[in-house]
Image: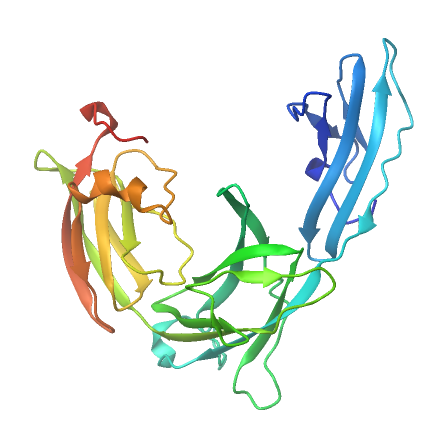
Length: 301
């Protein structure tokens, strides 16, 4: 196992397919132990890190005695290193540039989301953040290592910028997934940033400001890595880098695990939130009523 890869990315699967077994590390990287009952197990690994994709599988038979010296070897998988080209049409003051003229000021990283055939999704690799500015200074380059599969692509930004476009080979990746085929890398991912919109306000309940989770759900995919923003103790919140588009805003007193790709999951929240159309370079003022888990509402949290 490579010296920079951790063993906590290995699953131990029993004969009925359960992977509910804890694997711990010994002395840092690459040495592990696990407590297992007697039976037949399979060690499995399939993960992607900054050094590439790693796969492995091996059987293990456990009896009533301890087993020492088990060696689980990993091999590099068929992951593709996909280039990322980042350009920006946003004014410099829209994002922090840390004192140097970065042509992709405000870009942080790309987060891939692996789309499973059964309709489920799970976090995939992030971009490596190891690129630099090209010779012309027109854009910055980065890369991401992806195993074969279909991925939704989201961009995490800093400051008041958003991904105006995310494309690859002519495909709009805010509308269609990026498909990575075995032994065939897709074309470069091109990201163009633009100045975004901001929204601020206060979350309250029964007239009293309240700390809450603030959600801004776009009516159309906006290429943003979706996550809530936690207001301060006085209920005040401020969101940056939103696209000039329509969003459903609402607030809850607990964090939700919300699948925004599923319209049915948003139906119940529409009656408690409000739709606001945002515009580039503007700051919209929004007051939200906090929905509480104690309200015995019918939707799932």
